[in-house]
Amino acid sequence: MFETVALFFGIELSGNIPVMMDYSLDCSDLTLSCSNSNTKIIYTSKKLVKLENLQKTIEHLQDNNIQIIYLEELEKNLSAFSIFKCYLASFIPNLYYSILTSAVNDTEPALVVFTKRERKSIALSHRNLQASRYQLLSKIHFTRHDLAFIPLSLSSAFALSTTLTMLLNGTGVFLQNVTTHYKGIPELVYDISPTI
Image (cartoon, rainbow, N blue to C red; front, side):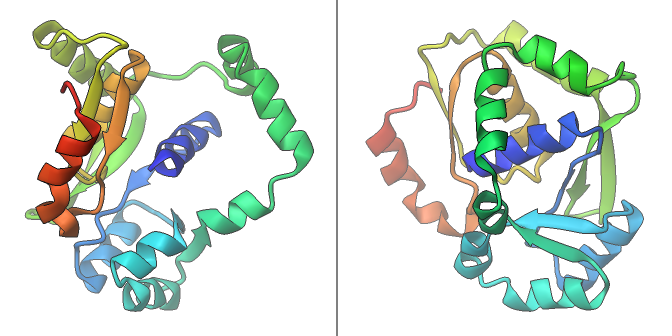
């Protein structure tokens, strides 16, 4: 799940709006979601497609002119210079971020998530995300020594805002994003011993 979070921040850094897709939607609803949000490219992993048996869904999306890019292929194409540049940038993230991005309007959409029941999209602004973050921080006190276990899909606004809150505050996060394996959650919780 590290790849999902890294990709999310990479898309944000590039000035684009990440759209969190819910693969549990049927093919027509997923295509409609892409159309409504003007999504032309979907980043996913071959492992997820295989694990969740999404081959037909991917084919349907490609038939509807949605480009599919696999994270495993991106990883293979990383140059040594790109890796070194990212390594150096990790020491000066604020400076690097200010060089690569222009001023961000906090009322503009920061990301889009989809609701399964109403079949509609929700655009959350940076201000919305920060408000959720501070609301959570006012009620739950956690430290960098905590570990959060999040068993929800990141296509859920709640799971995504909780994950971002934890990450931005230095708290470790264990993401169990594959919702079809819910029976294994108690065993995972036992094995990793999360504090949240």
